[in-house]
Image (cartoon, rainbow, N blue to C red):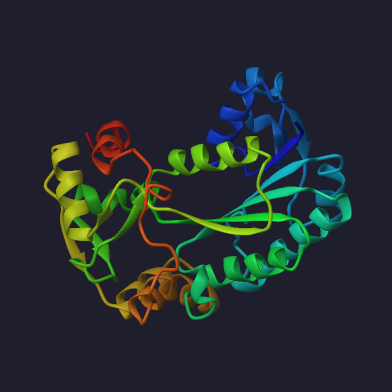
Length: 290
């Protein structure tokens, strides 16, 4: 089985890569800098230096591939939604040109809304482009990554977790490694077809208030959820040097999900994954906050 993996050093892609290697597959890894891989990983994979923004490079790197794990990597483009749409177009061209039979795409809860959800709109554009292909496509609609808390280390040290989302409204939180588990299982299983959507919701929905309580218990630090306004977030992001489009793309990811949004996928045995926020926070956050 020939499987290609994008963003193989990321939170999800690294887990997919590990599981494929352990399953006896020698995956093709697309990444800008193969030297970021450990020597023992390099021995067990086909590492291809590839910028996913380069259409011809993506096509060449995915020749003779049976299945593809595609992630739109983080972008610093002044217009992130357009950048994600362009990445999706590259994926679609490579899949069609090389006759790739199965593709698992890392999308997000909210992509089903299609418009008005900031950067997630870019993932929706990728979904739409992949859906036009006559091949098997699976969109993994992922919840809020536990690892996003790493962006708030300074605030957590000061005892608060900022959010523009209503602090008491539950949302799905998920360990990125569990997303990797689901993706790898789908890539290794070849008896599916058509256009599929599968959410990855983590073990339970949590509000920011509950998340702060869990982080407090796991790290030994008292943390409270604090609601901030969209304008507060705009100011923080602008102070970091982001463009207006970049700022709005990030702000709308939460504001767009506050407004008239009903997820396409309800929580079920298919969408529920095992790792709790408490276990992750104890293993990952606690050492960083001690």
